[in-house]
Image (cartoon, rainbow, N blue to C red; front, side):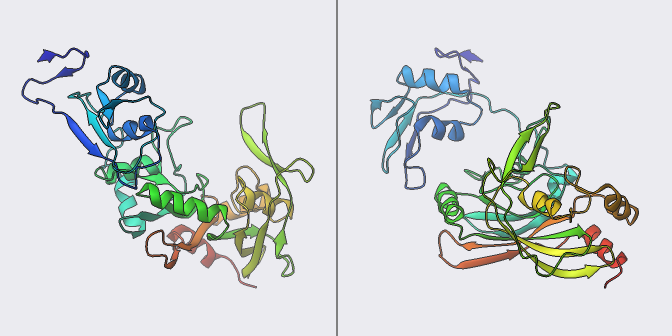
Length: 326
């Protein structure tokens, strides 16, 4: 084993070489430090900055600063360095990770649409060692990038889109801003949802409790403008299955809009109704009955309009068979 001048330890027989990377349209426009963090996995940011200062990472044979924005056909020269990659903390042998493969609804070279399981966060953090995006990266170790296009609450299941290229991520984010992405949810709510109640437009505001928990409250003065459209799918004794279309995309929007109308979603730990939840729990429901049933968007490469549907998990289907239809 030998010690290199930059204090990076390498194996004698590995002989790291100079790397040259030519930037294409996918990577153009981003800062070089962000690009390098993704490309040189396991290298700390501080170490990358030091390498750039020393001129061991250059663009078109010139020294650059970390804020430099890459352009098409830029040639990066990366000196012979090696930092051991951190071992992925997510094992592909874990059942929850292995089962994700079966939940992929659509995949091509640009994106993945997956039927996210309830109870799984979209990313690690807040005490979680990993989330769906980390699990997907473990399943697709050769993917240059995998980034969430949008989010779903931890307890919500259903369609979630992940971009495999930066151009796809930009394209889909633009569609979200322009409100040309349509997301439909299925929710089982308390009581008899009125047929005429097709729109809820209460303003919503995030509120942090003393406990540190974040909840969303109705606030039509200081809250953000919000709109959800509803349609009745099926009526049951004491409950209604509704389809919800969020026109805006506020945190917990559908859950709070259901609560404020007096029709809380079944098994909602934050905004639920105690008696209704107890009844549904007695019938075997163990999770929030909110499911992203479908998503419709324009494919970032083919420009085709795609509609992807995610089936309800068996536990939700089973619950519906136990309810008495009206």
